[in-house]
Image (cartoon, rainbow, N blue to C red; front, side, top):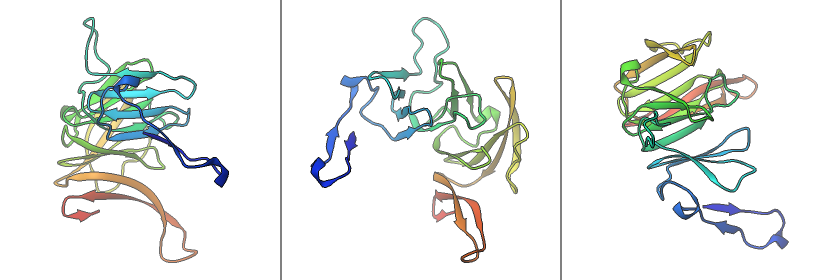
Length: 212
């Protein structure tokens, strides 16, 4: 659903526009919507990913279905979260967390790479994806928290190195912390120690039985 809210009282009430499978979406269940720097809207759904470009009316869909024997864009169709990665150091347009297939890194041309438990992910069920200011991708799963960084980007402290994985000619290092079920995460810069003390970036996670 898109709600247009125009400035000024004379504009009248907000205009509501609804999008569904009739408009090209893959599913009526859309757990994740995000906007990237190029003006694209990305929709994570039970069925795959839809992209709505800023200058187009039609959705571009990416699914786990192969139509002519080619490798499908997604390894698993149920997408729980999407995170645009353009201009964030990753050789992909978007990362997609799934409920059973790990994390898929998807380029705009539909070519993809997937990181799952054989590559060090704590669990194949991914609940959340978030980026911090150092361009590290944090992956919240049902069995732990992973952090994926490329090249010389430093790994977070107090997290064990799981594995180094090739990603389109570059090396992605994955670190992890187990025994925590993460439902959502957000990297925030907050004042530390009172006014004037400066800001410090922290990762906040809503998890089972606690907030970390």
